[in-house]
Image 1 (cartoon, rainbow, N blue to C red):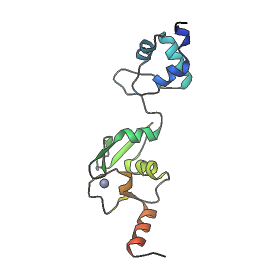
Image 2 (image 1 turned 90 degrees about the vertical axis):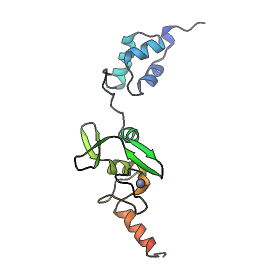
Image 3 (image 1 turned 30 degrees about the vertical axis):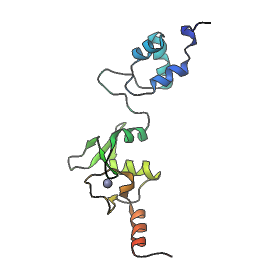
Image 4 (image 1 turned 180 degrees about the horizontal axis):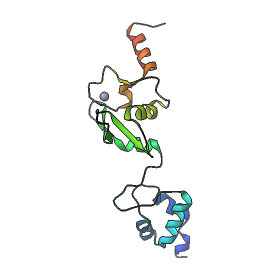
Length: 152
Ligand SMILES: [Zn+2]
């Protein structure tokens, strides 16, 4: 039996739509289905409509963070997103802004930071956003206790 248009499932359409910067038309052409069908699936999934020249927003904040972190040699990472005029890397996502340090910390350690975030002593790169180079109060206290020979 030969494949027909009807055999392209909604799941196949959805899978292609979930990658960013994809237009209904390109998916329709790739799968050989009508544009309206793709649009219908996009609406059902609640995905933003593609607009030429405008990136489709990431579906999760985690994805938004990952796409803005660029690893560099030495275990460091640079922020490719926006910066506050004072130089702080900023994650702007769905109309909300937080520092990239807060977002990366939360993603890396899977918990919100306690108090302010600073760079660990082994990190000498300005504005580094490598998760393992960020410390909140809890991590600072743990490190200081280790450094003080605080083996219980
Ligand atoms: Zn670093």
